[in-house]
Image (cartoon, rainbow, N blue to C red):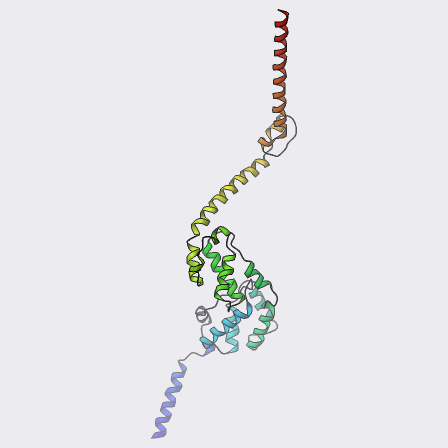
Length: 266
């Protein structure tokens, strides 16, 4: 009797296990969508740090089989990294060990030099939104060193801002990156105004360049050939005006001398 009860419990347990999807039966795309990791593009990214986050997400979703990791891994690669994945399939298969894929990935994309850090530090605001710049700079610095100090992080973000923006940020209110973002947000209007003035200057420069591409009518009228420069700065026009002025003065001087001679005869 007891054996029958035990066998019945085992049978129910086995039937229940059939409804639990095996790792190989998982919908990889659905699982990947829940991963808290960005796609890897190789451009200005820390490969080792990215791989560490990817493996933590695999552990969080209990993805332990090497084959499943390798298949999900492909879903987080973009651009040239996908080409790398396809090329790697010729030497390593999906059935290879995950450790082999990991080592090959790090060997290809890890930055053992200074370029990643130098790019992050040298990254500066050029145009557009100040908030977008600050977010991007923060990400680059954290990719460079996830353990970077808060004050160092803030200082490097501020260092990439224009001087007239830096002078408007209250340092005492920037105890963390959230405080800094709040201070930077106040300065967006100054950038918009400055951007408007810069665009106005650019339009003026464009108009000037357009005029320089037009043939000068003064040169054409004087049969000096086709020359490209602003008509106001035409040398021949200035020379002609000076000659006309000198000629007019000479005529005036002759008239005065003639009048003098006539008076003396009287």
